[in-house]
Image 1 (tube, helix red, strand yellow):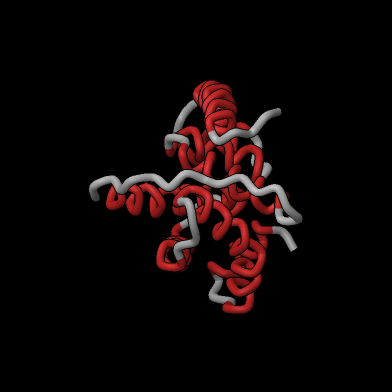
Image 2 (image 1 turned 135 degrees about the horizontal axis):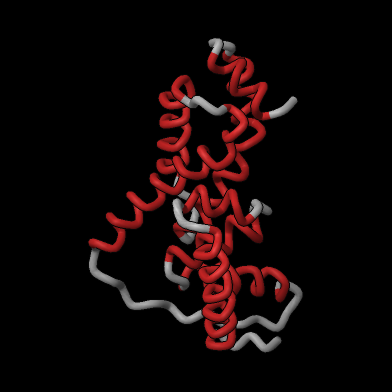
Length: 172
């Protein structure tokens, strides 16, 4: 069933439709939040779904649910980042590279650490475009910027990610 139809059913008050919508989109929302914040944050995810419940009846274009959902998620993440940036920095812990059977996991951890080290704007476009597979136009709508800005942020983010991975000892 399409998201558009689920949204319309939700707007008509069908609880089962909302359950299906959450079931379909909850993993993507959790991934986005986890990667933007550098770890899972159930409070932010819950805040997003609460905002969706409150705002869904006012969504005028049900076919634009995906950009709207990620815009809601972005707002919640940015609010949390504002709070986090207001706190004093702690000393970073250097990653230790492993050379055993868990090396694949360490690489994922290194990548996650490198992503977390990127500025929020660049990390966001990488996550939306590459990990959530959203088109450039949708990324632009979510970030409230022109498509050209998304392209330049992607280009800058790839370069920053490469530098960060090299700093952590990763060799391509």
